[in-house]
Image (tube, rainbow, N blue to C red; front, side):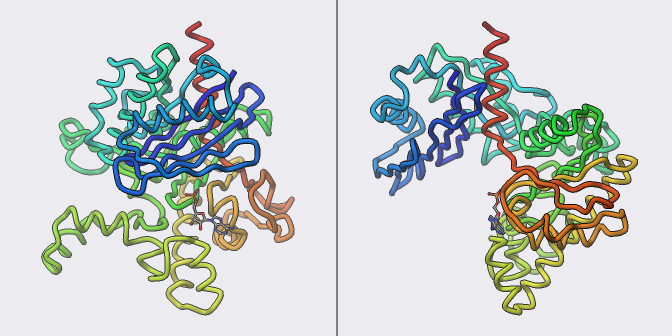
Length: 395
Ligand code: AMP
């Protein structure tokens, strides 16, 4: 069956059409700058890529054009061939613990969490509504970034702050990248043929998070109330001392919103190196001897290594460490640097095994106390598989 996996942002709409259970990507593409000038779309199919510039006033127009193109390009012969649409939803609070069939009522419940993810949730909902209009008889499924993390216990998800902040305002750790961590855990558990693995899953891309998983359940994760927390990222600071905000507000005259924006968009690799948020650029500058780039790389690897060590303790000893996403899958330099910083755990990198990019592989030595694997992530496939499962259940 063909399933569409969709990720709708405030001005973009990414899609992948996947054939299941074969797991073949039939077509994929991106609608960009929706609602702003210069809007366009690209569709990849059969090894070819088309790009068209058109006026995309809103998500509904983008979805309508997508449906027309899928037929015109011969990707499908009728819209009935799309048997389900799976949507990436960022925030489901502590209420949505797994993927769900989306109806108007469910969307109203999801909208309660808009305040917690103002940049993402309203856009996700807009995307769902556009598809409900275009494909009224097709099952729509919501797959939440937060869902996998809802197994965390109070001791992990609460902050040591006044308890009523949690009770009244929902301030707690939610965690993100859940769909990716779940996919990684599923892949590595199937590979080992075990469902009781203790996994430290490191999703290291432009955003990044580390998750401790025991027997398929998240014990702890590094992102928090928002995706700003945890490890250092491309442009995000990760964990900081919150009192710097009131101090800086006094010093700079900036508002809390502006400072939070600086922590989200001007910090991390970009903030420290002053070069770029893209780890390839920072690596290159470091290779050329740029001292701040070297420092940024060093800090980046250390923060990740420290989380791995902490989660190894929390799990009572991990069975496996996995690395994924843009940096984890592709940067042998960063992988080596991280693993060298967890030598105290008896983990050792094999340089020959580590010399590749973008595939499933063991990169640690045979005598490494914990094996380390690179496991490419595939959130779209996970979304499509959840959608197929719910479609089959609801038939
Ligand atoms: P993601 O958010 O998962 O798409 O990851 C994006 C990050 O992956 C960016 O910082 C890229 O620089 C990084 N990345 C992608 N390819 C490579 C590569 N070959 N070497 C180093 N970093 C890479």
